[in-house]
Image 1: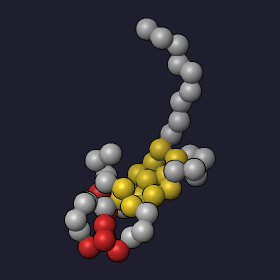
Image 2: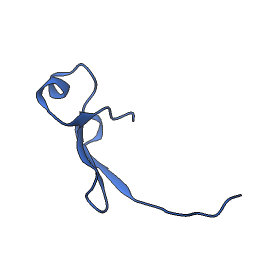
Image 3: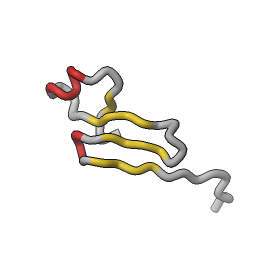
Length: 50
């Protein structure tokens, strides 16, 4: 097994229609199910299954 080189923490809020944020704040995106109103309305959104 290989040695761990780096680890990180990401927190999700609100489930599939919430947001995801990394501990350092670099990743900070809303989540929405593709094809929903929320997905259409928000500029920076990602699929919660990703």
